[in-house]
Structures are given as C-alpha cells and as structure tokens.
Amino acid sequence: MNKGKVLVGMSGGVDSSVAALLLQKQGYEVIGGFMKNWSDEVCDGEKISECSWRTEQRDAMRVAAKLGIEFHTFDFEQEYRKEVYEYMLDEYKAGRTPNPDVLCNKYMKFGHFLKKAKELGCDFVATGHYARVKHTKHCSRLFAGKDKNKDQSYFLARLTQDELKYCLFPVGNLKKARVRRIAKKSGLHIADKKDSQGICFVGKVALSDFLGKRIEKQPGNIVDTSGRVLGSHDGHMFFTIGQRHGLNLGGAEPYFVVERRASTNEIVVAHDGDPSLYRAELEATDIVQTWPNSLHIMRGFKMKARIRYRQPLQKCRFNFMENNDLRVNFKNLQRAVAPGQFIVFYNGKEVFGSGVIGGD
Image (cartoon, rainbow, N blue to C red; front, side, top):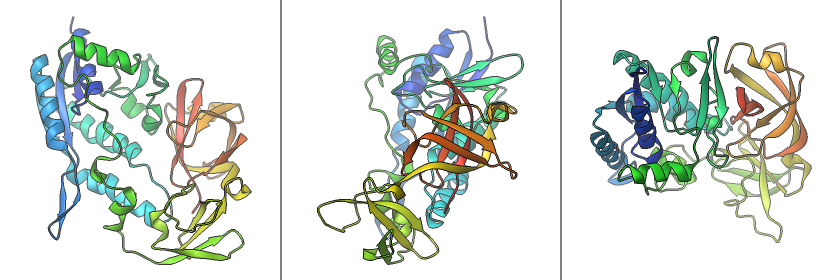
C-alpha cells in the first residue's frame, strides 16, 4: 500500500541512504534529492575552501540507482551563502558564536528543500537525522533519537509545526551500528563510508584559518578579568568562549577565553576554575516553540536543556520575560556559555523549543 510520496534528502552518506531504503520498504513512493549548497572556492590561484559535493552527489546517485528511484539535484548555493554563510560571518564579527548547522536545517533542508518537495507533489520530506517525530491529530512532536551517541534533535530544534508536519526521520529509532548492517545487507556501497565531519564549506582547514581569509584582521589585546594586558591577538572574531589553544600566552597554567568584547576588540581570559568561566543563568532570545505554546505550558517547571551539541542535558527552570525572551536558571553552573549558540529545551526526550543565547 502506497503511504504517500516522499522526497528524501540524500547526502551520499549511509544514514540518508538507509532512510530512503526503509521508506521504500514501508510502502512510500520515494524520490531522492541531493542538495548542492557549496562549491570549491579559489582566490589568487589558491583553493581557500574545499567541498566534496561531486563525490557525495555521485554516491547518492549510485544509491538511488540501486533502489530504482527517481533522483534530483538542487542547487541551493546562492541561498546557502545568503542565509547560512553570511549569517555565520556576521555573528563572528559581532562577537558571538554561531551554529550554521542549525540554520542549514531550518532554511535549507526544511525550507528550500521542503518547497521543492511540494513542487514535486510530495507529501513528506525525509532525512537521515537521528531524531524522531510523532504525528498526531493535533500536532507533530519532535523527540531525541534512540541512539544517544548520535542524537541530532539539537540541530532540529528551530523547526515548528509548519515544517515538522511534513517530516519523516526513518533512522531515528535505530542505532548507528544497525543502520550500517542494514546498508551492508542491502548491498549499498556506502555501508562502511565514514561520517562527514564539520561544516562542508570549511573543508580540511581550521575554522580560524577559514575565517582569516574572509574577515579582516583587527589586532587587539588579550586581558585578564582585572584588565591586565597579557598578550595580543589578530581579532576577537577568531576566538570562541572556552577556547584554550591559540592564545600563545605561555605559563604553567593554561588560560581560557571567558569573554569576547567586540566593542573594544578585547579577548578576556582566565584560568580554569575561575568563576568568570561559569554561569548559573542566561537569557535566551528569538524563541521558537516546536508546537504552539509548548514552552509556555512548562514555564516555571523543572525542565532540561543543553547549550551545545552532545552536552548532557542540564536541569533548569525558566520564565518568560516581558519581551517574550527567556530567563533560564540552571541547577548546576554552566561552563563556557557562548552568546549566539542555541539552547534547546527538553521535557523528557521531547524537544519543546529553543532560543539563541543572549549577550555580546
């Protein structure tokens, strides 16, 4: 029985390939779609970023051919540069730490890609994310993936009912090892392919080197929490909160970045254990709720949250402020809270919403 038509985002990796395979076996009419979001960049004869999209596209096409499904390639590079890449640069320049992967999901996979799915007459979109969605009569609910080591619900926390109602995550109930076994048993050539790491457009260079070719250097001072000058740097935008390496300060006890002051172009550092490296509360802005009023229902109650991917869930309480931002209080002190990153709220294993960590 045909359960509907679904456009699967096929990246050329094992997770999205098995997602397409499982949906096909479940009775969906499956179409494969590859998103080209970036291409190699060359400046003055030097390759300054590298993206293996041609290899990934070829792998995705081979899987689609193996499954006997229709396959499309969508060029979203212009949209990606405007909505994800430029956002990332602007955030670093402003002294904040962005998470482009979260925005890529919001705008690319479940924005432009979803629009293409509708144009093709599809009822759903699917990806290889390790997360789960449960569709009910009244709403679609987002949950963490079964594999705790691969759970990617953090990256999907900016989705609302407008997107979630179309989503399918076929590998969300599986562990990675089983996904690879399914791929191998089905004869998919990517069964043992390594997982992609990091951001595609950064390629095989350090993020600081990547940014250094796109953001003009602005020499400034490295200071301690009392204002004493300890050294110099090439620009606050090349550092992140909690960073240890690259400060070149020497000494027996290492320093960590505790603050980036964009207004004065200063990097503030402290030794590990210094109170300035920890926070008991934060304010979150630009709140997104996965289903209507999901966070309002839980305000003041005990919940859990994470302020970065893979961080263990932290106990907290929050309340809405007059401007609809959130004030979040944690049971335990949080280390290296980075303004610009996302905080994601959970009730058990269900994602209730997210916000952008405030501060300069």
